[in-house]
Image (cartoon, rainbow, N blue to C red; front, side):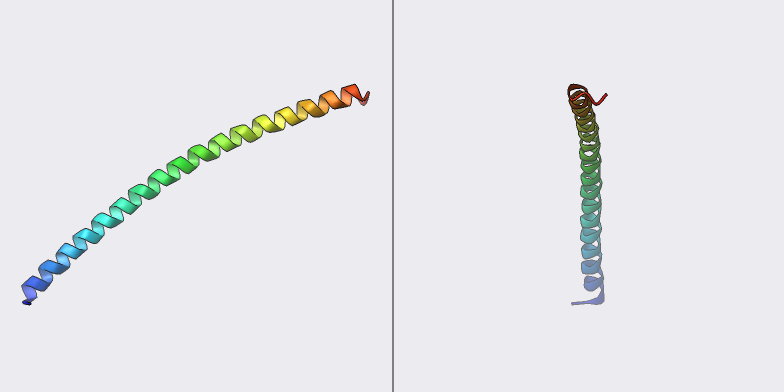
Length: 67
């Protein structure tokens, strides 16, 4: 194998690696976006749950004459 053939092969491998890294970066960005959406949904659900618990505690306290 000549030096030119080796250089060509290295260039091909370099290009393939560069494309792989670009795909991995795109997949990582998409995963981060999905995680951000899930976290926002979880935060909303947690806020709603806390409010329901507070209402329940308030109602319980009223029924028990604590208020």
